[in-house]
Length: 336
Ligand code: TRP
Image (tube, rainbow, N blue to C red; front, side, top):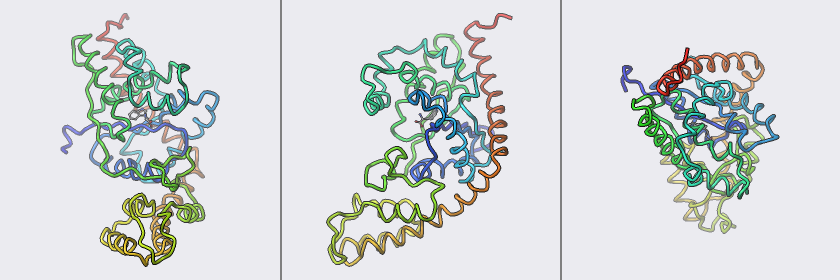
């Protein structure tokens, strides 16, 4: 990638809890690299988090700082990346308002991500309008910064599709290419399972290891990890597929040859869970220890973190305001 046409990346995280190893593998690690190659905006999606956390707004705002600490602790450099708080960029709400006219309720109801989330939350017919329309606000997040690339998990692909639909509609309606389409960047790493063996690691499912986990928390999470329930004696042949310890070793152990040998030994029999768990524990301890230390250090100076967020948000507002000028100009909303 050359500097002349550096891509603009936008990422977003709902601030409903601190980040965990699933986020680290799925996106954070890549973002630390990408900040050297692209202009990167990291959006703390507190407004979006409120769409299904009515009455739990304190949790949402407290977690803005937690997620920011996670970003900084893993190596996001605020000089290279712009970290911004969604609710503090009113231009995003303003742009959403215009985009809302370009999508039907039926289309929103067909969005597979929304459909699945409605099911999970048991909303049935009582869907908050703000929740149903959050794909539009997400499209505003992306287009306000003229993002060209949006790294997402595959569950977010319908959001990108809907964003690009809105971009095409908007540009067609005003007869000029004001907004830019974006490309989803899918991560190539497999999704990290929860420690209980469920497909997805998630704080709310209680099967996550957070980036600020203490040494004891890491050790007991590894101990509790789901392995092969039929691997009762050390000498029994064991199953590697669906075995969380091996999924984690695949994700975190750089010595892949060593992992392959361990898998073969485990399959043959003669390799106890405790041995593999000990190895994984060491690996995770050495990964998280410096992140936790940096997190503690940063958390001790909350004012400095707030300052980083203030500066990032201000920088982001300038960019979004420029897009809004163009958008409103194209709509004829420039009276004075
Ligand atoms: N929907 C994303 C999530 O569930 C968060 C998000 C908000 C986002 N705005 C975004 C992601 C813009 C990518 C681009 O965490």
